[in-house]
Length: 154
Length: 156
Image (cartoon, rainbow over all chains, first blue to last red; front, side, top):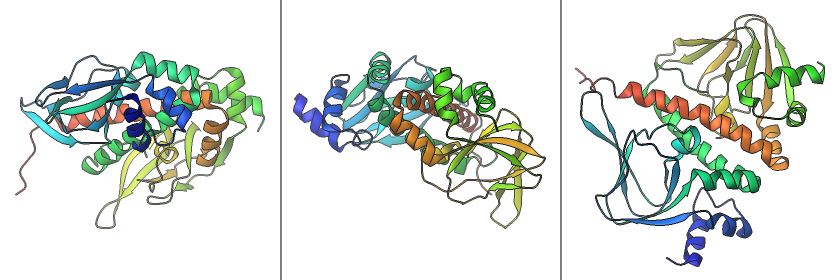
């Protein structure tokens, strides 16, 4: 995929669409384009990891190990979704495994580049972080509705 | 309330601890210090969310309505806790009601002011958004863990 094509993809991407064309061009210099074959793992639950991924094209499964030994499939992610944002923010191990179902194209932003953006281009940083915060908020609200006995942020 | 007093109290809260003194000064201009009487409702479940609150003193009940119209008391929040975090990020209604149990002091940061801070002072925005997202991540991880502790029960 050419640089122009990546830029075009980012322009329509929900979490980067708030960036203007100069900011998009800067941002695209910080990400890496990766391709995964079907049935390959991007990362496994418990791995150390500090990159966030933006899905350009493809399908990936999210699964978690349960305490009763079963691997539970939680969701399937497709074009326009983001994953890996929690470890980027809190630097804790991966909370789930991610495996490509199909041939998949993703953009990867690692922690070093993320911090460079926040430091050198805070206006871009604010837009990116707002997008990531929205994703995490949505996850909190989903767990609120499935786990009403736990106090969650309100 | 004197502004330097707000700065002192703000700086002691984990949410703002990454800010420099100058940055704390900027943020403090957007903070409201509220004194609340016992039994004051700060906001109601399903209200439109428009601010985050930090408890300086006092205690608050978190209450939700159950399906059959009864109120369920979820938790008590005290000094150092915050509530209303998600209203700064998404525009969805409040997920619970918050009521002061005692005479209480809180710091309030409204969504409008938060958005203005992000726009006019991106370096401050980056620090606050990192704290906020980190806080929310913690809750997702806790919920994930508790969900996978026991096999799902069949309903009878």
